[in-house]
Length: 606
Image (cartoon, rainbow, N blue to C red):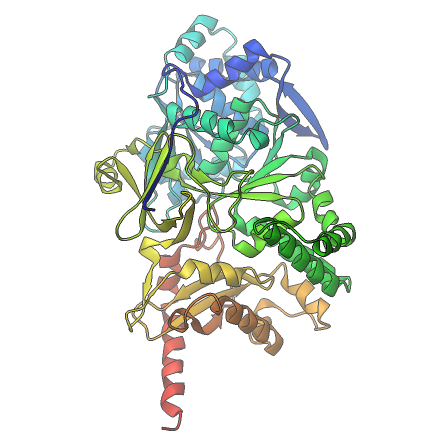
């Protein structure tokens, strides 16, 4: 199959805007809880009527400060309650919110503010305010900066008290599906980030149709979700709008170090995340079991969960497997569910492949992970698995209103309600991405006979070895990253005689791994040459190699002294490795790896 499409499930009035989703609830079900804010460890609910009042108050403040319809207002903050209020207030005032990652540098911030033409910025803290202050030299349109921690929302509400209700209503009513909703800048794994222009229609149509085909997750009685991904990311923004459209409570947590505790108190029924978080959850549980001398029972329970999940796709578990699964659940698996609040049934994973092992493990403990696929330019999801028919290892069929096509070279093409209207002030880039009505994603994939999509690689990341073998690095990297010792993995080998990998150690997991094996504490610099650590890395590499041909397998690895992070600019804020940056900066390490291999080969007896 080379194409798959799904018809619209819900038709939307073209006059509808994102803020209409809130207004509809405030009118029809004013007492419905839409948001919950954590205050002193307790979750304080806000009804639709209360949320609308907060939104309108802030929108009036923006108007009082001269924000005109269509003008850009940037938000630079962690994920928190105030961001959602600000998003909807800016939309309600007819303006356009532009997200900025709270980890952005001065140069990155300056580019987004200047390219988008932002006239105002709302930052979370004084530290963010300092970044913006330094960036303003290159962003001359910015005339106002507010700080959330200094009472920005309260100040805006007070300043807008005299703005006429009719003015706000007129601005709200003037916005429809075709109008610009936001400009979200791409992660920038290669080159300068591009601003993807997404419309109100992109969000409204996509969220309404997603809810219509996956109601058991997004609109089930008692459904609720805790958002911890950065709201500067399109995936989080999509879910922010989706839950308001569905009318289910949304909570925010800005600090991932308290995520487990916050999951326990908020008790979500579904969450969204990226594969790295699921890897961390699994690895942490495995390390904790090892530290307590229960490594073998955890390994048995994990194997049982995976086997149980696999059996669901092949006729169901046998009596013996059901019995083993009940025992594994009672002894081990329930602890993971309890740690996540006890009510979590579904998770939506995007931003990269999860891997079949983790997909089956989490389904085996009672958490069905719905892998999906999409990009900034497609308002997040194009495809997503359905709860009633999950195909682990795929990203599911298209959502309603979406068409997927596989080009002759394997590239995934998309069209439909999710696809952006173009890059901001960049016609050349838009023309390159949009051809004959199809968005060229840059990803490589294949469709099965049911129209389920499998992602096999990134077009620009395909490695061609000196022998002419095409190698997709992602499957190898994902498999190696699953090891608890590994933080990041980057496969190299373009134009080289064989495939190799640069690997970084996880500094959080290293102490537990060493302790569980009775080894003394080591720094990352010491561990990278430790025989036992290297043996464990080799084992992970060998396991990954079983999934590919010999020509595609990794022959050599180098364990680096430092990790790839957002701080050193080797990771994007959405945790994607900036491949070109790593290869550029570690060129000497890569050259030395291949030179040593050549020397070793030359020394072998003929």
